[in-house]
Length: 413
Figure 1 (tube, rainbow, N blue to C red):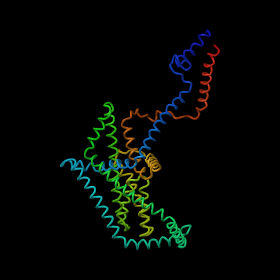
Figure 2 (tube, rainbow, N blue to C red; figure 1 turned 30 degrees about the vertical axis):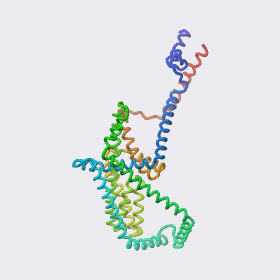
Figure 3 (tube, rainbow, N blue to C red; figure 1 turned 120 degrees about the vertical axis):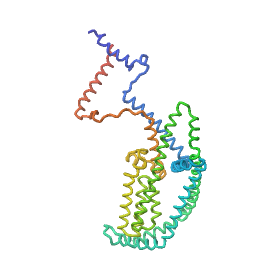
Figure 4 (cartoon, rainbow, N blue to C red; figure 1 turned 90 degrees about the vertical axis):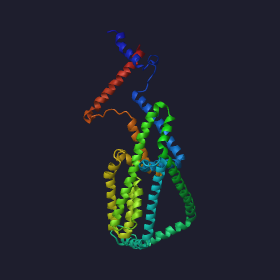
């Protein structure tokens, strides 16, 4: 075979691949394919990350507005079934007003009951706390713990705390004054959220259709599908969380009442609020309830309270959530833990509350709109054999030698 025939395949491969002839192939790729793929993914990830950072920055600049809309959507999700029920026998605006009034009356009744309960139990509770604190001090001084805390240590800490209060009285007063402004902001946020809720309940469908009509006609169905699955997930999460919180509060109240722990109603409300803070809320409520039980009834009752509330948490995770929420919020516990922790690091308690429903909605929309390939049978996958490393190294060496030989042939010509 002639020298020209021997070199023909290499030249043909170069023209077909376009590695050294941009005029033929229209592009020149000096970098390996894996590096080009990595670079392509990298700049796309950077663009997406920049968009996410921009959204977070814009949200932080209008944080109160974001809270207003989020609360309004939660109120809408919770009250929507009640409005639909009332709307069967009356105009929709009247049904919306009746549902809001009913919700306000229920919340007002609960607050009144809690206030009356605390005021009625306070004299006896003060005596129980006094004796309970004495028991705690005696336990710390003479108990089986490897370390002891004496009354002198407690008096020293108390005097230190008093001195700190005296030295920082001006700062505390200014912070208290600023908190008054925060209370006013809270009422403003609640009022604005209620205002938005009225229109979401009464004219939500009309507002959504108006928004769709502002989009190009080719993407309206996609947006409508995404909005439908997003609202289905968010409303299911909101209503399910409220129902589960009520169940947890009722069960906790029953346990506390059976054990004769004081402040049953406030502690039950604390368990209710803790349900809305994933991972952290329930343990915090349990610790506070155990402290109250320990100070009022002793360590045995405190331990029983902790066990009871822990069992309520297990009942919530294994029975209530699958039964009430079903598949509307199907996130793995590891994802829940990471999302809640990330939200807490970004925005504190607010981030812990908001992060999980937002991620659940985003995942539901993505899962609905994506095109998924058929699943792979695990038996069809080939596991990596460590004994193949030497053969892979040899294949890589031969490939490098062949490429070097192809690069050297034009220079010889």
